Amino acid sequence: MKILVDADAFPNALKEVLLRAVLKRQIPTLFIANKNIFIPNVPYVSMHVVPQGPDEADHRIAELCEPQDLVITADIPLADRIVTIGAIALDPRGTIYDENNIKHLLAMRNLMEELRNSGEITGGPAAIGAKTVREFADGLNKFLSRKKSH
Image (cartoon, rainbow, N blue to C red; front, side):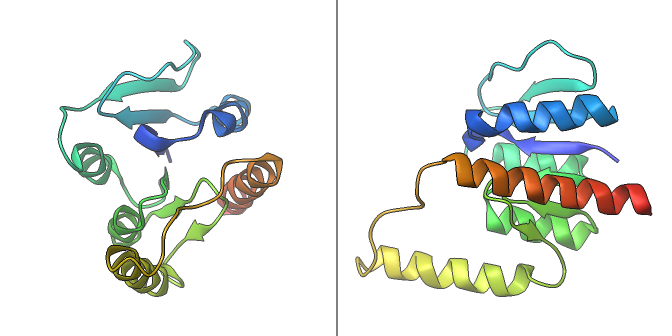
């Protein structure tokens, strides 16, 4: 098992939580983005820069992902691709995307995008705060605990 991080929009506030878990459990982790992002030089963790362009990081993540991997992303279409491969995705806000919920969440995302495009809804998600950090840590620990028991 490895962890792949959609790092283009991964909040810095969550990086420390993730790194602590990865180092404790010695899980290979790859941050993937279209620009270099500071990642501490620690065992099991590396940075992979993809070419500029829409969805380049997403495509690389999907190529590298294998069943049983964890992908951390807020991108629901990417999460759908990941779940189809047999892996699990985790949103930076703590939601685990799996075969039980991804199609519903994808439909909701598409509906919200339509509403935003029509101007009926404006704004985006709230900023990352202490509650969000806790929810991400809880979702990550839930996944890792489930993995350990299998």
